[in-house]
Length: 215
Image (cartoon, rainbow, N blue to C red; front, side, top):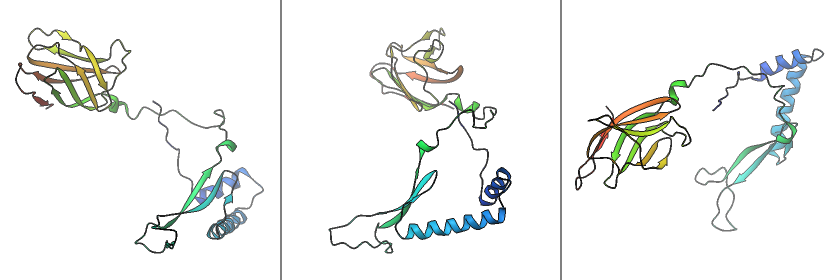
């Protein structure tokens, strides 16, 4: 996946400086006075129930809360009720169609590389042959020829794949390993070329399942 970060946060001072640079004929002090006047005017109109339509978004106040019946008074000043006013903003997405060629961006080094590797926190083998694996970054592509989950026998180091994958999520995998003989086995999960290993025990018939946590 691609993850983006903003290049910084711009406050009013930086906004005025940038506006002055982009519009050489603009006077910074005049822009500051205009910004303050517009802000005060918006607050005044919002308090009077108006919806403010700006170039990029609309600002408006909404009232909300529950009432027992139609005679219940609206009391936002009473903290014992859920009556309140909230400020909302509706962005005009249709007015800001982004042209990728206009957006300035640069590629950084991958900062979450170590976080994509699978981590096993615990395993549990059920009496019906289901192996449940807990952890994070466990999900993998079912279409991959290299990624997946499999067991390795301790005695002859034979690789055994599950009969089928029951569920494959980021924090949990459930697989049908009813084709395993009783005893201790190694568990291997491969995801995007990275591997996590643990161990689990297949109990003999009639013995309660055993849970092994990774040390």
